[in-house]
Image (cartoon, rainbow, N blue to C red):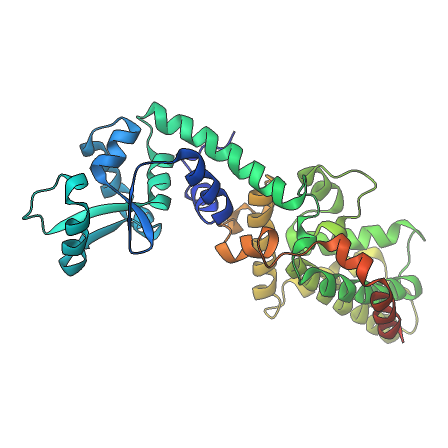
Length: 338
């Protein structure tokens, strides 16, 4: 089980998921104060809920202030504090001369609950958080996340693009590369996968627990597919050029591996490779609970915008899109082949 007290990335993944946060707010139904469009709690309210002293809350504010402020904790001052006191003086129990008041919105309230190790109630809340996050994602995706990548509106164009560039590569392999007539294709694909996300197909399948019949490319995010497309097109062109320069002598598998490695080291590729690795490592960790150890250094929290793309209003039902646009997709593919 994930330990939310340890990882800022895992905490932020929860807090950036507005769907899970909303369900938690509905379930907990905590007494709070509605002001300026949000529900707020004082430090004492937070301490009372978690069964700790306010001094404990102060200690966590001191140690994790930047994170808590990022997620909504504020020091209320001046005119805003005056208005707040007028409305909630009977609840906040603060001296009238108080010049600033720390307030937690619901996200920062959850945030400190994910940090507190002294509180049994916080421990129970962390368990509920993990359950609700999983349930929310499964609910939004129809029960599974294997193909959550397809819910991105950018996936289908990227998949069609990759399919056509792959034909450039396979044609070059067929005509210009020596080796086993079947296995050489998968071997060169592994060279490209390893260059892009540091795993071959077998390793990737293991990380995502894919069935042998599952097509790896059908589970990749749009950004990853586009980088693979650039490699397939570039490697295909380089194979054909070297074949021609060598007077029609077929390239060895070693030659092709060298071409892939040279392309992966090109400065032009670095920003795209870094982006693809970051997206894969981070999204798979959050959405699929899959950890890519070889690209762990690229792991970061999934943004609120990414949650919208994959499980929010901006996400799509891929199967319905396919069913509704079969003829259009067929024409697009035919046009790309001409």
